Length: 116
Image (cartoon, rainbow, N blue to C red; front, top):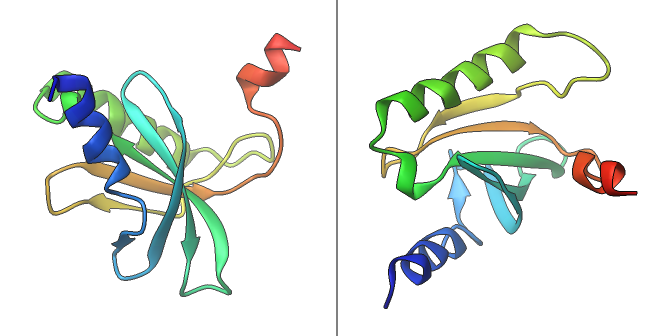
């Protein structure tokens, strides 16, 4: 199996997983340069939907990329504006992948809005 298929298998294995005994991963909804984004259900708070961003497998051992991921998390946690999504929770998975949790907001992505 090639490296891309291994990575796809790894990320698809998140579906159905429960993180922090609280967030049930439902499906993958996006992928960026350094992270993958999943729709999840917060089973401890009225079963609301949340989004979980996880550092991609190929970047977990790169200190500069890990710092960039952490800076994104810290910046979002410090900002308080109705037009900017907030951080609800964060942590590191047992396989040493950092993640953070944000509210799920239904609608078009920024990319979809720009393309329209």
